[in-house]
Length: 453
Image (cartoon, rainbow, N blue to C red; front, side):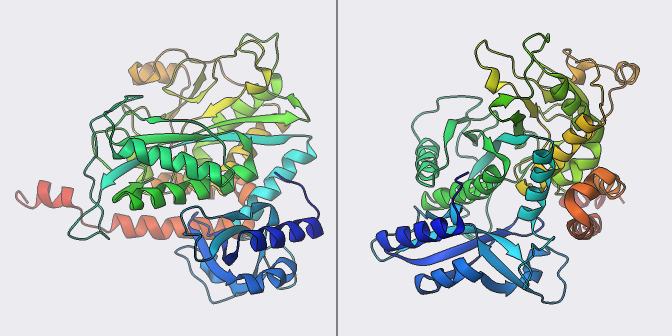
């Protein structure tokens, strides 16, 4: 992140707005469910907004569980000022800034997901750590419904597979355009490729600190969708949009640094993992069931978390095995700073501020309490019998949102990570969603039962 004083930041933003003939500035923040919220101000209001923030209705942050209107202030983070590359610039440019949500008195609003992450990052900083993450967000491109563009289809654009170089088609150009837009927004990209399922793709952003990355995830999801629409197709981060093929995950590579030193690296360990790294892994494994409701927050998330589709459901870790929940990418000599662990259960439809918060909280719990990591499991856990898994104490993630809510609601780790306000509102939101879902009569039920009952 760029570190400027408020006065330097203000001068930089006003200068950039003038140089690029910016007329509108969109102020961005997220609600508890990770939905991007926005309102626009004109450049004439910018200086005042940078000094005092802009008032808005804070009940928009509550997700499904809306409460009475409450006054809040959106305070722009001046380090996040960027021009929007998909907006035309010939008739005045449009920029965006992420905002911290404050109460009218100026203190942080505890219901702001960005504040939740900042609070967890301070906990890490107080222990001497900086938290770095590198999420891999998968998504699908689907054909637009020509009869009704507001109702997307699940018609795939190709039959490609993992890393396939399909014939030149719209998806190749869309990935290229997306990468170029991300880079215009200052977001570094490492890889882009076709994923395992037909019409499934992935663009990997370059590892950075967790707050910057959470902002980047929100920007990434919007850019992917904007580019798709420009090409006449639809992009979705829904975890499991099509039955019978792989869903979309968000594997999160992560590490802790102390200054310039990677706290996860130990040259003398068999896996080159420090005691800190092993305790962090142990914390993730122990508390993974409790944090699943945050990392996999939708009813549909649990259609992906089933054995047989590369989604991890068993609480185990290993180096080579991609069926494990936690994977340790193999160490390459001279790459000490790249030593990291990969947590594989989250999906790309999560709220990244809250997901990074609970992962970090679980890992720090392991470090602070000296958890011991179990032995790694290099065999394919999916192919083990239930008895074998039981003998090796390999447990599973919750199988549906209801079970996940129960585990989260009774978790001190989740409660402490989210804070009382977000914790209560998040649980209420998820209970509303589960009750709406469980009372639905689905197409499956009608096809299976209506003719015979």
